[in-house]
Length: 253
Image 1 (cartoon, rainbow, N blue to C red):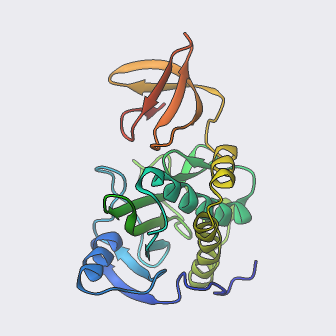
Image 2: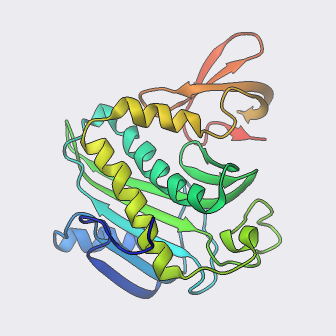
């Protein structure tokens, strides 16, 4: 795919900032003041308090990585199907990363992107819903593109630059990412849920393999067998029990 913006709407409206606390928080505040076109992209050079799932924080040197937030309005999606947004977004980012790095890229539930056993991208999805549909969705992305070193405590972090041994042009790569995200978002809008569900499982980290996990202080071996409709991780244990876990209820060991 050519590294130019060929989308219908994703990234067409662009807001570029220097330093912000969080691109998701900044975009959410803007959307409270005025409606913006679907696919509006806010990008920053630095996040002073970048957020991940729960209490997680995101590290990035100035101007080296993708620090992005997109605004979408998926009112076509029923609230009961809301985790399909995570799947579509994750697959779009997976597709982009896969085209650069190949077979070792996986989606780690609920929505991180891994290369081998290291994290290359964190995703934060924040939705605004009414009783029946999703009014607004902010997709936040922190993708390690040109980061060449990480703090010692981030032992599981890796970047595209480290893997390929070269830096890439940030602006071109953002355009490329927009193309991949829009493809999956339009797939969702067309109601191709089965394809999204199938594709997500095909690239899911540790799917159908036995690995150690921790939950509520208990260590055990489990096998990921799927994701239920509510977005919970479905795990089979050695004794045959099937359990479902919300985000942060289980840790990958």
